[in-house]
Image (cartoon, rainbow, N blue to C red; front, side, top):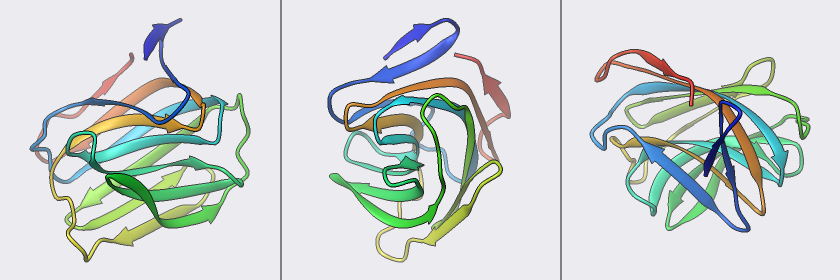
Length: 154
């Protein structure tokens, strides 16, 4: 993870993650502007409870927008076709309300899932990628009932 030309860049040979915020954050909306530079997975994370538990949504291999639950490893919960391209900027948003996760990409599909099996109800936010990926994150905004509204330019 590094700052480069006003953006936050994450790259690595395997799965990488970066977290911020309060581990007691509950319902919120996370909005991120990202550019996939290489690799098959470019994600944002919600309800992060350390390196072993979180939800994630992002651009996935085989031209999809995908939603995951991480319980040690990532398991796909839902996906929708979305023809994304390396080098193009995308705005992703994800909302967590109770055990419901709803996510989408501006100008693209929306996916949702209700976690009936041991939902994560609190946690930090994060950024992640995998598979030798390199992702540029140029803007992050968190809006929620339990913290102040605010955008962050890394």
